[in-house]
Image 1 (tube, one colour):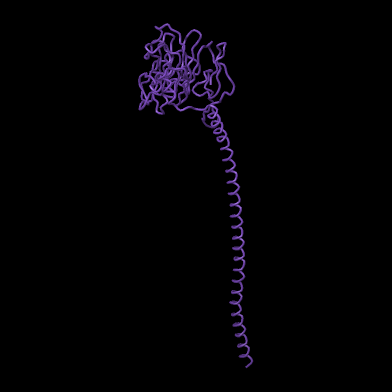
Image 2 (image 1 turned 90 degrees about the vertical axis):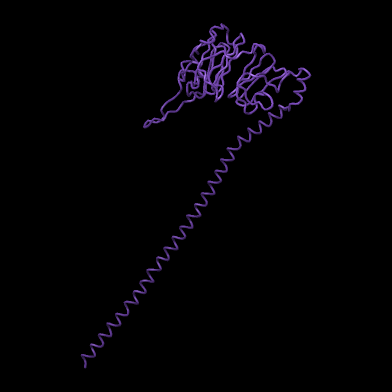
Length: 334
């Protein structure tokens, strides 16, 4: 996460891999003395990002885009898919803010006014209305390793807002919403049967509706609209399903409570399972001990039986020997 203060200082905290915090290090270290096992040390407290002062910041999944007070665009973090805009087909990571290749937009001599960092792409809107993009917008699209001014909404009014999902950009041009990119979850409101667009297109589902602000998450788009819109726009709004925010917040809270209770329940179930398993083991051990005792008793009985049989077998020879003696004696006496 990044926090931009009023004095232009920038602070970041969280997971530092790939240099995504922009603090000059990726926080990696070897946690094993006997082998190489690299890991990353999280930063739970805000740490100052060098440079600045800054005027804009936007965080992507593993990189960020910032604008300095001198209207210079800089990036830091993971560099794959050209998302840092360094040119030269560079995919190198940057652990601190580095300036992007400005070859394509230096001629505009216009300051950046809106910045949006997506998953693997970036969008910067200039004061003159031109839009700079670089990186990879969609998994099937071309990779731009440096900013290029290839989108212009001059005919749709000046851009006042820009937001992004994982693989799409949503613009606010005047009071009209426009979008380009992939919208598999229908989050772009392009109209019936239109989930994606490789070029900027108006959100037909909200045609004639005055849009005031746009906010996006990974696969969701929220638009703040003016209720005092045209008659046609009013009919469109009436046809949409209304969401009771209080009820929505209540349901969201219940879901969170259930999610929090789930691990405890699972842990409790695990404890009960362990207790039951332990009791079963003890019962099995007792049964085994009883079986061993029975076996030992049987073993003790068998030798006594064998000795008894052996004693009987020995008694017969004795009787035989005595008979032989008596016979011999009788023979002598006679």
